[in-house]
Image (cartoon, rainbow, N blue to C red; front, side, top):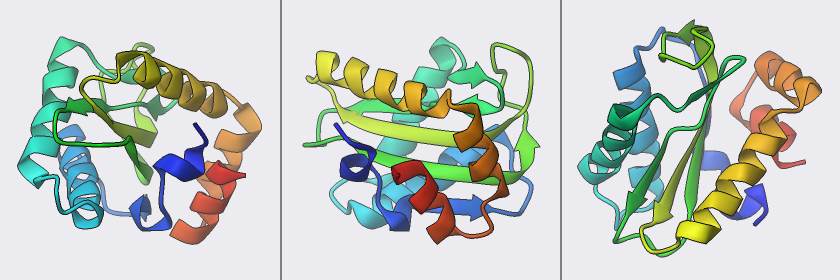
Length: 148
């Protein structure tokens, strides 16, 4: 599945104010709920928090892949945040996170979910891409970079 099938420009944000981990997950939930009205914000947020309680989704090198599984969702939905100030995220390398690529996926699509997550992780493992994303000046540029 291509990133353009998951992520929309409206769910791609460069964030300037300093955020906490909780506030970042709330922002992700808000953006997804705005674009997908069938998904209540609180359900989106609870799915992310439930996953974080199992262990941080901070994969290292300033990147986090928060994700949640929902019964009401029909197809995967993504949200991308680039934080101007890195946030503490309990990442595996103990480094703060400034790139958050969040996924919400249908509960029953386990294999598809793993494939999508692996694809996103692979894309974000490209050092040059992450460097360019961190320099993106606006939402549109950030979206263009990640969907190329």
